[in-house]
Length: 266
Ligand SMILES: Nc1nc2c(ncn2[C@@H]2O[C@H](COP(=O)(O)OP(=O)(O)OP(=O)(O)O)[C@@H](O)[C@H]2O)c(=O)[nH]1
Image (cartoon, rainbow, N blue to C red; front, side, top):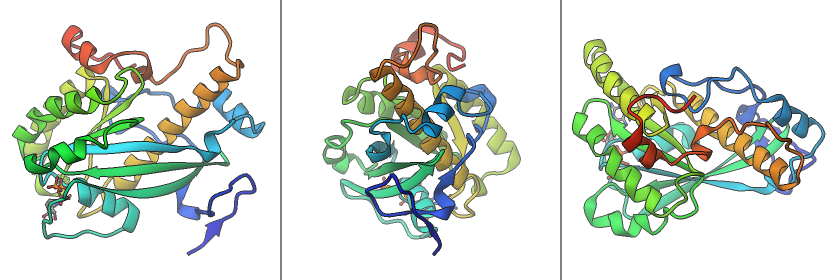
């Protein structure tokens, strides 16, 4: 496999197909963490001038939660291993994969934590929720009950984390199994719920691979952008009037879902 060597990294080189030079776009503008077309000029400039501090050495923790058998393991495996297993094997506790990216020339890593959806393993899994920068709540697009349970998964994940600093994604899986009519019905509900909790909505299929790479690239890019902005803030280079564009960093998704019925993410 071809790789790209970064002179600024102490880690192994990044795969060529993990290089992000443009901001990947959201799946639906109605439920997006932000709708800018590109990285902010502040972030681009910081990367060009190598003013990203420790971001190149950081590992962002991503937890993937949701009901049993909704497809969390398959989603991670499709992206990390380009593999799909049609047989269900329950995750016992947790498992994780590391993915290395290069964003705007800066190395950046995601640690993807696959957690158990089965009730009996949930208490083991929840001990690993702490320290997440990104929470991905997964539901099955063909099972409305799994979308209904998303709020509980969110509450559990936020108990262990600062609700104002996590980025939330709501991901519907098994898109290949739903008819267009079925899909559009559940998408309406998912979009509504995603905008209530300030999450970004995606619909994917791990069987066909539809939207899987696009989704994880978006996660990596937004997590990277937040880290660079935080680094700039720490080093005092942000100016009065600068806006942190990722709204989930400035609002509490659970409080938002109780107070605001409409979108609060843009
Ligand atoms: N057709 C189809 N089947 C899928 C897809 N994703 C997952 N599956 C199937 O759904 C079942 C459950 O998938 P898993 O990824 O193991 O589910 P999980 O959410 O990790 O389950 P737990 O570990 O118990 O929490 C398996 O039989 C998969 O093959 C998909 O995109 N399309």
